[in-house]
Image (cartoon, rainbow, N blue to C red; front, side, top):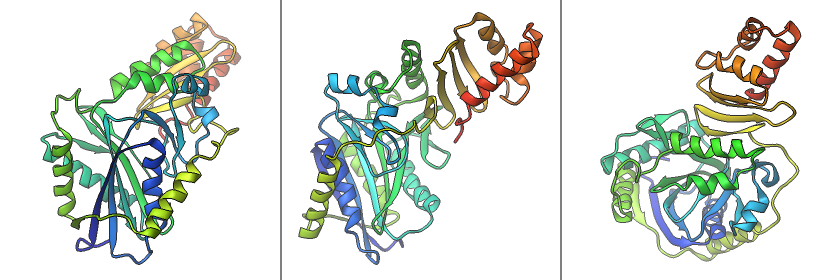
Length: 339
């Protein structure tokens, strides 16, 4: 998409969770492959809800009963990525552009726009990996995307305030300790504009976002949707009310990704183990057996590699077989880390 191509700004305001996700899905489905325009859709969710990634399973990722008891809707979005919490304290942003170019280049362009937006409100940020924006050492924004119809779609939320406790309460947890660590990690590793001390009302955010887009596209304000666009959004809305996928595995086996560098894992079987992995090292550990915990504590901060845990276990009096079993459990537990 060239810099001269039109980008239509469409704000749908505060809408239901279903309509929020139906809006970008429907617009993408009916965008012509050869269109000389794209969309920047913004919205807020009237209600706090969980949005599952396209390849996730609700019963594997969530405490479904806790969600029901709290009256929290669960939406299976068409975009990739992990489980996210969305509520009224977030401005949701979706770029919908024609063509099926390289995903990495598409994400890079969208993230560059959002970095410029943050700079426009006086906040220094950095891109971390292919999908995240961080500020002052913590994740401020994550993103997900998909090809829908002939369009590429990129979605993200500008976190004014992030409700870590509510999100942690919805996630499937093998133990109370796991849920407590999850809430603590979210507080440590995630951030938002309020915690950063940035005062940015919606008008200021929108002004900065539009200015960042204007450096790359010819920006116009969208009129009302036409009949085909409206029908596509209605069709996407109806699809979102269908029963959720179930019966699969967690996206991150035995745990959850906190940000690109940090994961929480727990082996909840007999003699449970719980670990926090960060940048290829264990940084926090707990275990039912004190001897196993003592071994893992000596491995904190060291690159997790074959031989590390087993060597420390033997040094603390474990037999060769017991040392190898403990190491296999740890390496198996952390196998999804960094993906």
